[in-house]
Picture 1 (cartoon, one colour):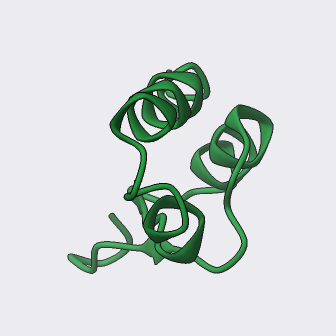
Picture 2 (tube, rainbow, N blue to C red; picture 1 turned 180 degrees about the vertical axis):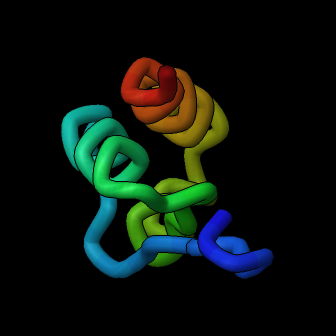
Length: 58
């Protein structure tokens, strides 16, 4: 947090490396929108994507 403000990053975040980068740059949270919505029709693909992204978290 910066001065009591939660910093959230989004837009085109779709790899663990991107997650790691924005968190290390100071973001408190990451929003994954379209990249996840595109996979909602296939539960397995959706879960694999989320598991892969989670690998970018500290």
